[in-house]
Image 1 (spheres, rainbow, N blue to C red):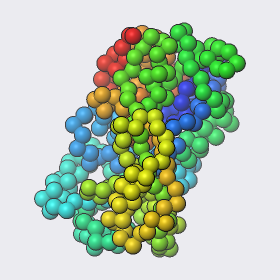
Image 2 (image 1 turned 60 degrees about the vertical axis):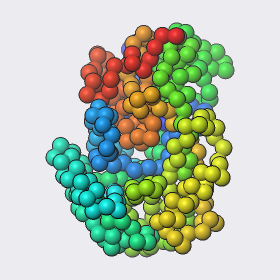
Image 3 (image 1 turned 90 degrees about the vertical axis):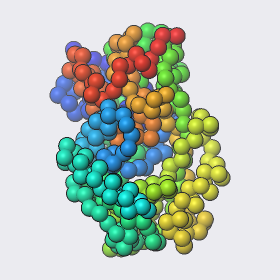
Image 4 (image 1 turned 60 degrees about the horizontal axis):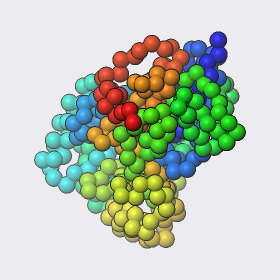
Length: 372
């Protein structure tokens, strides 16, 4: 019997759910429709680093989820034949100015590597060795290289997975929709009934769930990044991504393309306008690492809205008061890493049913979802 599934939100989670609903055993019994008008989507604006292993966050569940996401992505990239422009394991360099801090980071990396083989090799680098690997940089601090680190382009990721799913069982509707009190989809042409509904609307999750009589613990956060044209090093088309101390993430994409960012702006909510303040902030961070850069080298800016929970932790699964609806939210700036694994878990739940135990990855959902 065919199951009708709706996905509201086509970012990292929604696109991954759609992909796995088209690939997992039982996909021929799934009829999937994805709704997304694209406005403000964090994923479309995002390019980032996949390297959670040296995070100092104390949330152990978050770390296990992020580690699982980092493990999944290279497998998914091979299976879906994603190009290097979408996802590539380039290695990650994390720099420190203080020798003691660098040694502490190295010991953390060695400890974490024991149960995270996806990290690959871990090496200490001098300032000169960092420059050799990323010749754009001027006198960088010494650092730690984690060979399993990667970069990802969110917009290309979602586009690639949705194209694959559309060849199987997915229809994509580029429109804004809402839920009704029964958990069905309200479109401009009327209400459409579904057997299961996955809601992954990021910063808009609170508004999306209100018709169900549910309040979600979500606040929006604006993020901006800049794209720059830099010197093209023919013999360094693949450079590690850089997490520099005190500066924004530094993501070379080869062929003279560089992305720097992103900002974390709590006060601007759903405002999607590019701001001169963010542009100056991001450019100053880029220039600190590449002093010869001039403002005219900025070729573009991206703006999106993330969703954060009050404890900065992601949550996902069947809504406690409305089991037909599954939800994912609170991914924040780790969405590029945690979104794919959450999407796969939700897709498996849709197809295989049951009550999966995800307590290793998250707290109880009723902490984040309350009755209005």
